[in-house]
Length: 446
Image 1 (spheres, helix red, strand yellow):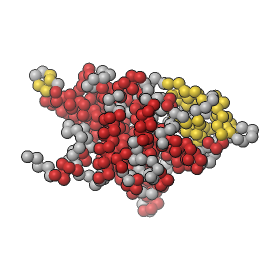
Image 2 (cartoon, helix red, strand yellow):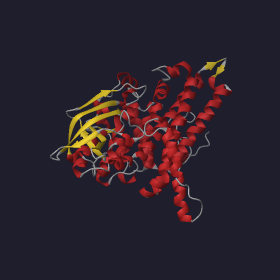
Image 3 (cartoon, helix red, strand yellow):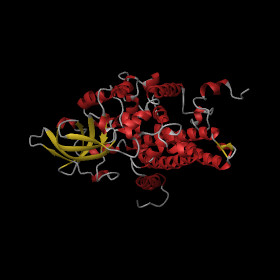
Image 4 (spheres, one colour):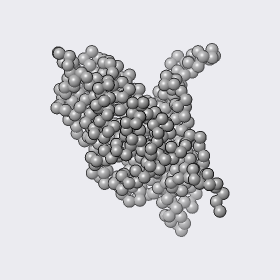
């Protein structure tokens, strides 16, 4: 007879029983962060992923594309608006768009945000999610926060309704982590009615699927402006073949005398850089979510294999060296889970300005750390799986896909080198702020 109470079995046990395949709150360990609406969302997302994604992922990866109707299905079933919301639903969206799991809009929080991305990650790899909803997660927040009423009522509404798609178009051939180095130029027409845009954008996630591009451009004055550029004459996209994430629709975007009406400017001209960095923290947290579930997938599939595979007369899991690998893989994954949950809670308790000061560096550090963790965990999973961990399709399919995708965790959203340096500089800045508050300590000079 189990020693677990009915409360624990009913409310705190869910999903795979394999060690570390699920978060602690699904393995019998109560958490103060999760309530009934979180459980409903988890159940609904798991069913949605099992029905609409898992049976098809390998075919989509081979075809390097996603079916057109999948995005419309996601909108209909209530995935798009929550993914655009992050930790809080905008008041004007409440009651206008469905939320999967029938979560009340007023209850939506950062842990719902974690769950919806976490369940997506069970497919193994990040290409399908980034191709399907990357633009919703990365581009819509800035558009909703700073865009005109016209843009919100037309472009944003069409995106959240499943009628149009958008991609965030920042990176260029010569401008990656150094966003201020971009060269795409927007020249205002003589009559002031439109911009004429010339340049290139590269590695644009979901660009092959998109009707709109939220693009950071440099005006002839040198000021940076944020534009919504429709897929129109002069804008062409070419699919980029990446080492992984083949279904992400990664595009090279050419802009050749593209005419963009002046009313497609987001916010004020010259403030585009400020607008675009406003969502960097959530982007980095979102990448951390992806890395976390990918690490759990690696643990789940490699442990499952080790329980059945026999070598030298005994199960693979009976070899101490294999158990040692699992111990290290799991301790890193469990620590990452705790850090993410702690950060989500801290963000919920601070005003935006406070959170930016105190947690921007921490979020950058977490994003970098999550990639470092996943690189180690997926490496060890491949070692345990052997040849099937390097084979596309079959029992090792998910791990093999994560192995190809892992650098798409550590590089985009800020490379780990840039982010770890940022984290330290921000920590020194916080120290100066606290010194002013307490009147103690020595100024950092940073």
